[in-house]
Image (cartoon, rainbow over all chains, first blue to last red; front, side, top):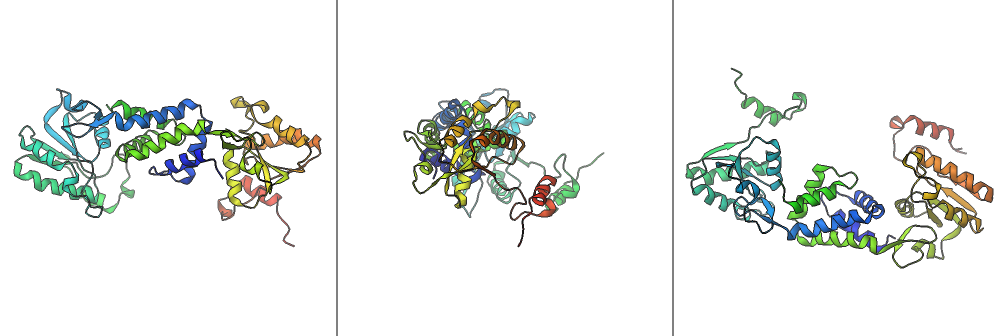
Length: 200
Length: 200
């Protein structure tokens, strides 16, 4: 019923996460009516996404293609003795937005997941171990997600890093700021209780 | 902080309706990790969207570029004496999906909206009046949205079409099928009551 060019766009949009058939057709018809400049801008950005980005050879964060190291790694102000290990480049962004961390990062690009067949060699774990072994790093902050896979990955990393005599920490668990005790789930509440802090 | 190619894509995605900064960056990072074929497919569909589509010269529904009339208008099985007037091409799609309408359509491409400066000449109203004046059409079903602007547009169309001695109808208002009386708003309930039907 729909002309092919629109149907093709709807099919392509439907493949994105969180976008179902209804949203896809709404977006397609919005783009159809919008000035040509908008769909052109999107198409260009999509084309350049893969060709013009690369990964930092030190921390595996994303960076502009052709540059060997990312902005954080190149910044001499950043403290190379602290390493925050995260799952995805988006996590680096969230921590940078906080503006209170002055160390460096290491992006794993995923978590261990036996069900999906993702083992240690599919993640950037070996480069992490080598990086720590070089000796500059004094503290490794494990900042994987507070999920089952994130916890399992953190435990595996602990096993790998402990022999290297480095200080290992994890992000604190507890009640989210602005959250409501009444609505906190059992696990979060248990973590908040066991990790309770001295008020001095 | 983010490399330009990703930031550009996030900015472009944010301009789409219903997509905020968080969703935009989630989508951008998804595309970054997804196989190149997906972003390529999207980019191509976006480029072809404007170049390979056009509007039916009779009902103003979208159609493949180069074709003068859309599938519905070209279909000799469709009843040319019935005309369903809708706001957008998506509305045609919804009515076609229903599968119970055998007449033709007329797409206005918007609604009257004095606040946004959209007057009768910005919509496909004149071609509609001309189409009805030609005499083939016996019934015009006004199927604008049940909103303030949709109602105002329907009233304006009534004014224009009444002198042409054509049968004018509107889509029924009432409780949506599968809905719950308890959650129906006052206006819908009022419409359902005043438009109540004989059970015979």
